[in-house]
Length: 326
Image (cartoon, rainbow, N blue to C red):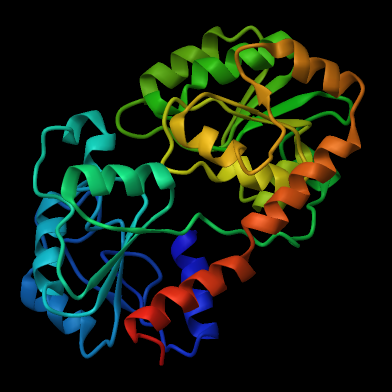
């Protein structure tokens, strides 16, 4: 999603953009660079896919080594050529990579971008790499979705209170925390994303034992419809590299209960008014007597600090400073 936003902004800045991945609807496919590939890519194939590009943007592939051979090969191929490494996650931020050293790599012709001040500080402290912070950006004027259409699609009654957790299912997403909040406020719990990293059996157990109605999945609804169908949003995560629902809830005008993951405090400092996941009473009281001022205030914060126009300005400044503008 973030790569698509960057692609659009690069085109606005005058670039021709060619997309490269291990699979999916991209311009060039290179075997071995997908997250779940068992064998890494051929360096020559990567080089040919990048061709004569003036600038390469590496979206997390050189940051989080979910496919370590791909990380190492792409980093080696990029050495000595202009590249922008967009770090959404860093190795030490995941327990299983905490002892891995030497990543992300660095080169004098590269620029590094992180999605949070926290990651930028860690990158400087652990790797001696200076990064520019570019928070994720959003279409702050996105039209709202259809509540009726979405609720019909999900078989939800018009008067049914719904708490949506628009995330995947992983231990760090804290599904139990979302369920507890939904039960406490008398809401149906809707988890939109799939289970990953072997979490399926545990998720099935949690949903089966829940003391409130649960819905799992998304039958093709776009984000606007998902948020429109919900009465409130929960993001109970213990860790997020950024946490898009924190901003999306403001864009789509829904109250948010959020966990205490570190980057949440960085985002809250912009002025968002959120509810805690640990205490259901404030959110329940707001739902009983909604205050539109809170919704308007959060939307204004999103507009001022997280717009696509802001992203374009930051990218222009970064690229101009490097002499990388067309």
